[in-house]
Length: 266
Image (tube, rainbow, N blue to C red; front, top):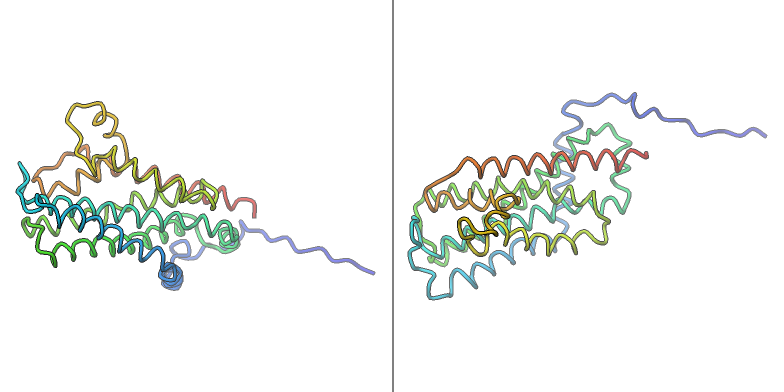
């Protein structure tokens, strides 16, 4: 009898397709996978809207003007809840790779010519999509309730900044999804996101020069929180932009690194 040995596959010899394997079919597949997760979609829509209604619509101070700003308290809280919802949505979407790892999907992708950077990019796009839904839901609630008041330009710019800026937390979720075991990732990220929101001054404004402010300015939420409120207050600082860009690069690079390391055994 003769025995046969499995053929060795030279992964390095595969020809990398254009754009590292990024194509409409892959985007469509990932979108379908995302929308099938009804719990994530409902969580994205319900939580930020509920918080805005509780803290920005019903209280007596909702329609009071905020000092040194272009709007009222309801508008300020609406912006905060929109970026918080986008942060939750994009982080949860990125962290969903932990489940894919547990199912062996990441290692299967390594057998394909898909470039790690292209795969990370697709995940960021999907997270950006669900984050946009969250921002839109909060802002539509603000329009319908007629409580939030600020200039039209502030409505537009704050929504765009909340949406695009949430990419930082999409990369964060993706990084954590590859770094932590699938059964533990959300237990860690839930309290962690709340802590980052507090340190960034999203829920309670940080006093200038205080110890919390000095610590918080180095956290991922600090720059985004200030940037998203910049149209409301009418001022912006370069340090806020630098904060967002640095953390986006750090988390994206970490996600690509972990993807390569996680699939290197194939």
